[in-house]
Image (cartoon, rainbow, N blue to C red; front, side, top):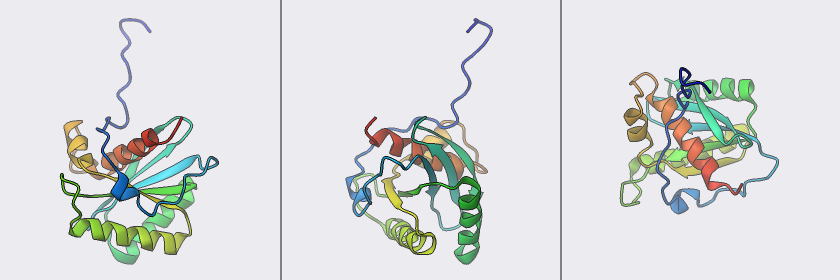
Length: 162
């Protein structure tokens, strides 16, 4: 690479790894043939979406679902149809000390609903500080949820054995 060329900006900023043991409770074992993953950063009003591949161990933000209830699931279905992931990864929020809170319970309910509606494996990942990392990397209000989903998915990829 010449000195006039620069490295491209990463699609997802790096996130600090966290102990995800509590979030991962109840996760199905990750199968070797699962290659494409879609991550969701669940929120009451907005849900960020990112897609990535195991082989490249990278993800890219794909959008934000600004809907609730059945409308949210209809939009999730559109992303599933477009990207055909082998499994879903959902960020589960915790207090900084690892304690669960109201949004932890909401995210876990969302995971159960995804499993029931779509029949795909759904893996939970501790998402502490993903939104903070997204804003620190320059995310805006418009794309912070999708960038957070990207951070969650890349954190998940780092947890897998090479």
